[in-house]
Each structure stands twice: as C-alpha cells, then as structure tokens.
Length: 359
Ligand SMILES: C=C1C[C@]23C[C@@]1(O)CC[C@H]2[C@@]12CC[C@H](O)[C@@](C)(C(=O)O1)[C@H]2[C@@H]3C(=O)O
Ligand SMILES: O=C(O)CCC(=O)C(=O)O
Ligand SMILES: [Fe+2]
Image (cartoon, rainbow, N blue to C red; front, side, top):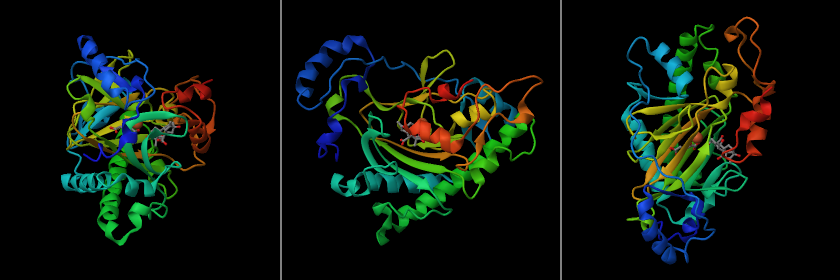
C-alpha cells in the first residue's frame, strides 16, 4: 500500500531477485520490460530459492531439563536454534509488532524524519555504510540506557509515542533476559564456571546492545512471477548473541555447515537465537556464528525484531581459558569489541569479518 506511494523502494538491483524455478524466466524477462522503467541497476545474478522448509532446526524447550546440552549441540552444529516455552508473554511481542506496523505505515516523509541511519535511525533499502542494499526498511536503535531514552530518534520523542516507547522497553528487557538465560545455559552445557561468564557481558550497565525493527514490504510488481527478493543479504552478526522474533511471514534462511541454504519456518510465538562472531571467538570456534539472510517473497509483509547483545566497548574478545584444552592455541589474535565493531563497519554485509582477526 504505502509501497506504491514510495517509488524509491522499487529501485533495487536486479541481483536482489531470486528465481524459484528457472521455467518462469521467459515470463520474468517479459515482465522486466515493464519493470525496467521502474527498477534500475539491472543485472541478472539471482540464485534459486530453496524449495522446502528445513525441518531440522533445533528446538530448545526452556521448560525441559537437559536444554543446556541441546543448546551446546545446536551451537556447534548450526549456530542457530529456536526457543519455545520461553516464558515471554505473546502480548509483549504483539504490542511491539503493532507499533512497528503503525510506524512503517506512516508516509515516507514522516519516517524519514528519523533517518538516515548513522548508523542508528530509520533506513530504507540501504544497509550499513558501504553500499549494501535490500528490500527492507528498518529502525535501528542503540540501547544506551536501561530503560533507554531514544534521544536522537524523532519518532519516539513525541508525546504520542508513549505506547511505542513502552512497547520497546518492555520487549527489549524481555529479550535481554532471554539472551542472558540462554547464555547461562550455554556455560552450563560447556561445563564452565562461573555460570554468568557469557551472560554478564550482555547484562553489564555498559553493554553495547542494539535493537532493530525490520519491515520487508510486499512487492506487487513481482507478484505472479514466482521469484523472490533479497530482503537482507547474507551475513553473520558481529555481536555475542542475537534474539530474533518475526511475524508469521517466511523469509529467514540460514547456511548449513556445508554451505547450503535452508529456509526457516516462521513461528511468531517463538524466538530464534543466532550465535554471533564474538561468541565464536570466545569459544575458540566451538560455536559457529551462523550465516543468514532474508529472502522476501514479495507477497506478504515480514516484520522482524532483533535484539543484538554485545559486550562493553573495552571488552577483550578472546577464547575463554576455562575452555581451552591442553596445548590448545587461540585461533584468533586478540582484539576488543570496539576494534571489531570498527572493522565491521568498514566491511560489506557478506564479508567474512573474522578473517582479518584469524591467526
Ligand atoms: C553492512 C553493514 C551493516 C551492519 C554494519 C555493516 O558494516 C556490517 C555488519 C552489519 C550488521 C549485521 C547485524 C546487525 O543487523 C547490524 C546492526 C550489526 O551490528 O552488524 C548490522 C549493521 C548495520 O545495519 O548497521
Ligand atoms: O529480519 C530478519 O529476519 C533478520 C535480519 C538480520 O539478520 C539482521 O537484521 O541482522
Ligand atoms: Fe543478522
């Protein structure tokens, strides 16, 4: 709806298009004649979309004993898992989703009052400072105090934004608590002490946390073409842990250890946990940071909310001595979170950011 009032969103590189089935190519090319006037930077580099949902995503039931071992297994194998029976009321997610939908439905000019992102604020299509693009608009927040104050975000300053602010605060507190609980189960599963060895890094007053609301709008021009768009290109998250929740629209994909991509069935009542690069380093590669991306199908809006738990800026990121076997060497040279973040912001989304820190 608002998408049609928003021609700039339609200017997407052709490389963002992914075909489900190569037999649609002729009709797609015909449609391109129509679309060519509206979509610039065309280059046909689409990759096929995985056919089926992956049924092998590990599911961790937090109400069950034994979840610590299952979490460690999932972190080693996938760097990704789904959490159920997490105890967070659905209402907290639904309220924030409602506020997000309200915001993304505003006229473009209103949304842009909170942008461009530098790196925080409202962003449309452009991701990060180095030329990455996707079929997405988003709000990126720095969580600088608990509860945080949103000083530089016009959209949250108006008195009428009280319900948005309170939904955000409620949701972020819940996501942080879940991140901490899961990180403590990881320490338990790895049999290392103290139990809060990971969780204290995201629970500190000075922890560097980010929160993101993503909206992948429908794309009416692509309907009937059976192809998809890159909403958010492949990447790993640089932080320790990410807690993701989406509405019931599909799109999230993860790369398996063999490099193949699989589609994660959406589940609006559950959370998905991503291992970030920093946790890969702290476990000396035992846990893998998961490569993931979002392919938007163009039919239905996807709204996602992601809490990124990072450590304080000065935190040294290195393998935990408690985890190192006899004679085991660190796979990485030492760095602080501040150094890693700086390097990340100089990189493109798909870059292998840990590469320059490997020994
Ligand atoms: C292209 C970029 C966007 C990003 C900063 C970066 O230069 C490389 C890392 C990207 C990422 C991925 C995970 C999170 O969505 C994010 C907020 C983060 O911390 O690192 C984004 C950054 C961003 O969108 O600004
Ligand atoms: O929107 C999503 O589902 C995932 C987005 C993501 O990976 C990110 O914002 O880092
Ligand atoms: Fe991500």
